[in-house]
Length: 276
Length: 236
Ligand SMILES: Nc1ncnc2c1ncn2[C@@H]1O[C@H](COP(=O)(O)OP(=O)(O)OP(=O)(O)O)[C@@H](O)[C@H]1O
Ligand SMILES: [Mg+2]
Image (cartoon, rainbow over all chains, first blue to last red; front, side, top):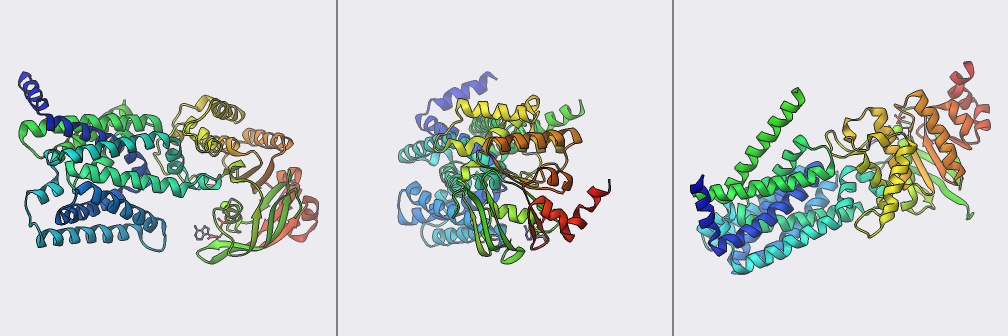
C-alpha cells in the first residue's frame, strides 16, 4: 500500500502529468454528465460515430501540421450536427447512417495517415490515447472547452431533462427541443475531441456510456443519476490513471477497465438489494 | 376573425408521412369551450391532438390555434419515455413549468410552489420523491396530469385522461376539470366516456377517419350516429 502511495506521489511530482490529470478529470466529468442524456435518448451510437470522425479529423490536422484541437473541434461539431439530422429523419435508418459516416471518416483518416506520416506513435496515440501526448496548448484549449461544457450543462440542466424525458411534450409547450438536442450534440462533440487525445478514438465513447449505465443500476432520480455518474466517472478515471502508471498500461484502456469493474460492482449491489 | 376564437380548422387533414389519418376537419372553438373528441379506435383522435398541439402540420387545409405555446398543457395518451427512465415524480411534474421559465436556467420559488400545488390537486404529493417509473399506471397518469396543469394557463389538451383511473379518481378528475374551466381554461379531451361527455361538454367532435360530427351534445344525441355511439349509456 505504501508503495502505491509512494508511486502516486512520484507521479504527481511531474507537472505535465498533473496538467493532463486536470484535463482528464474535466473530460470525465463532462462525458458522464452528457452521457446520461445520450444513453436515455438512445444517442450512444452518435458518440461512437463522432469519435471516428474525430480520428479522421486528428489525422487531417497532423497531415496539415495544424493545431489538432482547433481543426478537429469544428469538424466534429459539423458531423454531430449532421448525425443528429440524420437520426431524426425517419426515412434514413439512423444507425446505418451513423455507421456510414463513422467508417467513412475512419477510412479517410487511415488513408491520410498512410500517405503522410505513416503509422507512427502519433497515430497510435490517436487510436489508443496517451495522457502524455498533450501539449501545453492542448491543455489550455481543453480546459477552456471542458469548463464551457460544464457551465452550459448546468445552465441547460432543466431543459436537457425535459427534452430527454418527453421531447413531444417539450415541443408541444413551446420548448425549443431541436435547439437543445443540437446543444447536446455539440457539447458531446467537444467532449469527444478533447477526450480522444487521452483515451483514444476507439475508447472515448465508453467514457460517455459507462458512468450513466453504472449509476442507473442504483439511482432512480435524474438528479442522483447525474451526480452519481459524475462521481463514478471521476473515480474511475483517477483509479484508471493510477493503475496505468503503476502497471505501465495505456491510460484510456485502464480507465475503461476501471469503469467496467465499477459497472459490475453496481450491478451486484443492485441485485443484492433486489433480493434482500 | 373572432377575437375569442381559439381553434379554427378549415378542411384540415392530418396524417403520417403524407398519408391522411383524419380528414375534412371543419370546426372552431372559443375561449372557455369544453370539447370532447370521441370515436372508435384508430379514428384519428390522437392524430388530431398532435395537430392541435403543433406537433404535426396539416397535410391540407388550414389549422389555427391562437394560443401561445407556453400556455398550453398536454396529457399524452402514452408516455414517450422508456422503461427505467430515472426521474422522480417531482422532477416530472416541475418540468411542466419549464415553458414558463424562458431563458432562466433554474426554477423559481413560484414554479416550485405551482408544482407542489398541482401535485396536491391530483393526490400525488405523497409520491413526489418516488421514481416515476415505479408507480402504477393510474398513478403515472395522475402525475402527468399534474405536469399538464403546471403548463396550462389557457388551453389544456388531454388524450384519454381517465384511462387507467379508478372510479373515485375519475370523478375527482371531472370535478377538477370543471373548476379549471371556471378559472377560464379551455379544455379539449379525447374520451370514450360518453356519459360524462354528455354531462360536461359544450361541444362534441366525432371522428372516424374523417369528421363525422361537430356540435352540441344535445344535437349529437339526436343524430343517428350519436344515438348509436351513445346507445349503451341510455340503456342503463
Ligand atoms: N406513428 C404513426 N405512423 C403511421 N400511422 C399512424 C401512426 N399513429 C397512428 N397511425 C394511424 O393513424 C390512424 C389514427 O390513429 P390515432 O392514434 O389518431 O387513433 P385514435 O383515434 O387516437 O385511436 P385510439 O382510440 O386507439 O387512441 C390509425 O389508423 C393508425 O394506424
Ligand atoms: Mg388515441
